[in-house]
Image 1 (tube, rainbow, N blue to C red):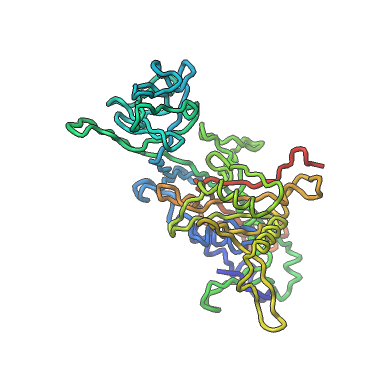
Image 2: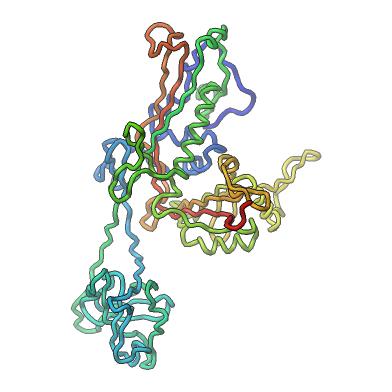
Length: 493
């Protein structure tokens, strides 16, 4: 589906509301993202997710864990729960006990584990069982749990393990520095006796539930009775929408309605990307109310889902060294999607987008197939929509909203908003579930509030009519968003 290019058309002798594209949205709520993606310059994030099919399908007010293969449950008309699968590649951490230590070896206090003597370590869970092997953060040191019980509760959410160093030398011991509070370790394997072993450990990951709240937005446009009367031929300016298949499969979009739809796409993009939620994660209470004490419920956008974004500084703009370092540092957050691709959407304001393309040219990526046209009409094409390194693809898109966003003035004459960038990983979670999904329950609502100028049964005595549009949508975003920013402390005018 796309807007037909070229000059605007005019349709005469037809009502301004007679041939609305929105009719599709009224019937099918899953069509809402596609409707917004008509304007990728206004809603680039929605357009990317829609193009990749990252949206829920067939969810209704009756959806529950049984009817939807255990993925979603509709709690209310504006609240959907989704399952969060636990990662069975768990990470454990050293924790200080009540005495303030993370390990105790009374025989060898400075060389724990020497001579294969047992000692005690303190971790933040009882995930590890008896006769399991723990590998420490240096990926070399291995500890064997010397009992059949595993971790024992030592109070305060700390668990004590009796362990021995697993190695082939009596002289080996554990470096105390790698067992500091907060340092990572991980279950690696089991190690049982060869004859008559008795015990095995059971582990189950059940995951949890997340809450997605759908935001409701509405806008309108109006025209007076006098203005309508002056248009004697009832000419309506607008453009055609093509669905494929020629004239038999297209619809006319009046100019006034297109303007309203553009605003809808812009507002929906902001909410689904940058919107701040108004519901407490702890109490599930709506915290924002109007002067009549009515609740204003809004869901969180992708940037503020979960624990929020990682902020990554970019002091000197785009350069090859910074880009390589950025991908190295953030690769762990970019998983594969169903096709095996590891990718992320990168939304940039115009200044940053231009600098990115200049960087691509400087890196020598324009050597082949960058000439468009023939003869004297040839054009050198140095515009790039992405970058791939080490199996990670960045889909780089200019965002009109970010280009025109408010910013703080910097000493070099630019604004903070000139360099702000949003990086949204698009892959699946370890469980296989999509990390990004647009969600909607309610179809688009459109209606005409007819004034006295319409005659007959009217809704208002005003000499004018207004067209209203109302939509409700949300996003389930479980990946780790990243914000690239130019540091501005001590750099503001």
